[in-house]
Image 1 (cartoon, rainbow, N blue to C red):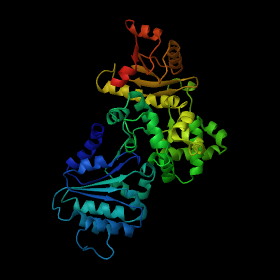
Image 2 (cartoon, rainbow, N blue to C red):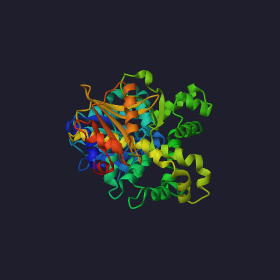
Image 3 (cartoon, rainbow, N blue to C red):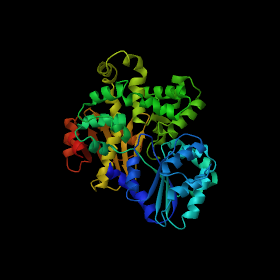
Image 4 (cartoon, helix red, strand yellow):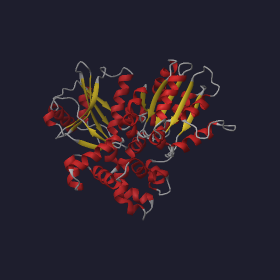
Length: 458
């Protein structure tokens, strides 16, 4: 995980190496690990690390003061945050100091003065020594949609933002060194790049064994994590769970959700927007502007993999789960649908494969834009295009052989999208029919076949 986080670390180091005092915001999904990055950044540097709690402002100051003081406190009876900051710096002299404040939203929500005092403190003391403040949060929605309003004019004092994103599939492969490729894809379809969840799976077990032991067992942490995610972040969970349940069944257009739930379209739109703000769902957009009349518009999908898995397989069958062994539940309720489910997530694995080819200089052109195309009569899983218009199309087939008919369908969709593929990448974990193999071997063929061997070793 260190390789991919080097980019995040470089972002922070640029501010530290500048020698200037600044306030930065670092945030990400609560299941995307942040601490290792923060600890790496402050390693061998003078720093103050504080984790805020959801308490009153007065209690917050008491907790922080207690953590800072090894001897009897010399602060006033009702200390201010400025006094806490002074105490934290102590005898730093002119040495740089890094302030890391985790869960800072708790302080903002309970104190009208914290941010004003912090900005004033940095402006005053940052002239004589570098003070770099990292305000850290796991509340994505609040940071992206409410923080600026909460801070008002003080938000202009924030020098930069860094969203710590989920890690790609290749990093999971490195993490689970002994996990077979197919099991790794299945695991990624459930846990995604949310690194804090990876610790609960064991690469000495099969995918089924991991799911039974670490998700279906009521005593396991992951059993309840999906509901903790929604209950931690959302208020009217009955409404959100209804939407997620129907989306997991395949209702992904506003009208479909309206007919499935009976909620008004206006209500659905508001609640979908909130799910998107929390990175729980997303609105899918089709690549490019051509062929818009053939595009399926307003498609909503579940973004968080654990929520997707939970609402697809467990939520509708929870009563059965409590009445039978986990392995029997898996065989009855998960086994038949898991491959189709994983097929959707396999597309992101293939997209990552193409981007890695480009990074290594093995792609035909430099990619300027990429995405997918969701048509009324079919989809194009991957589209990559250069600034000059060079175009690559991709088809991803999980556990199903790609045939001549599949290629015909892809080319039909390309016409509808008004795209001409200069090169076509076909991804399949179950191989290709003879026609496809023969066509790929002809001189000048634009077909690139990526099978299980290339995927496993790529």
